[in-house]
Image 1 (cartoon, rainbow, N blue to C red):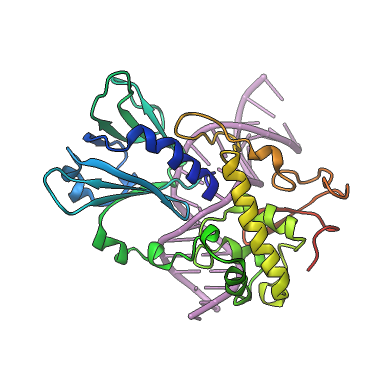
Image 2 (cartoon, rainbow, N blue to C red):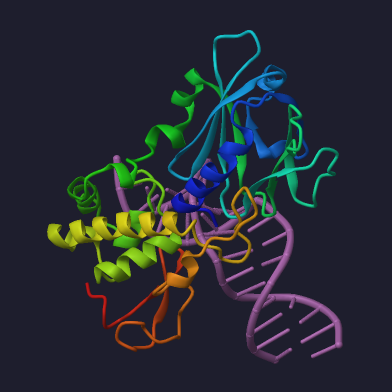
Length: 280
DNA sequence: ACGCGTGCCTGTTGGC
DNA sequence: TGCCAACAGGCACGCG
């Protein structure tokens, strides 16, 4: 389930494979996977991929259409099971392939970029620059945690009344944290996921913000977490799952104090925490 | 305006 | 052994 570190890893592994290459053809195998921009599809033919980058959990590509000055943008949300892989010329779609981008052929390089998505929660939006302002999710996205001072993140969290876990998962408060890194950061900060954000002292929230940044950075260094089947755009698994303190470890011993880790549902999500190391 | 619950999806897992 | 419910979870949406 790609969160910020996994999407960042996919950007880094996909970019060298597709940057500056031209898109020769696009096949949308499942209409709903292209959330908008169907009318712009013809403009993709012959367009050059100028930039591959990330915002929150979104992977974006800026493409320059042939002979046009206005750029187009592909914004992918991978949700739980979205994947990219560049397959050899002539490869047939896989069971869960939703969109195929045929790139210009280069000697010795694969040319079929597949967007696969087993659960079908993911999507691609094809847009012009002006369309971003009509995309509510994009407009409301909070700041990038790695580019925002911990103090500022703490103040944004403190302004909300809900359970602190629900608050840090809220993409309008800060962008890019999902269930894994929420649980890990709360453990490292020693804060119970159910504690109300507004009731936590600012220094503790600043500690939490610092731990969010630390856990995201550490995971990026490890190329993300591979739960089940996450792979980067070169097919490699991440390694950060080996560093989890709590996520997926319910019922096992806390690595710090030995207490059996508790499970609960918070903000509608499976949640694991240590009732001794974490307090309200 | 905010907070909370539900639906979207399919493959995997565990209980009876 | 086989079936089926529960589960995985980000976000849109609707309700209070």
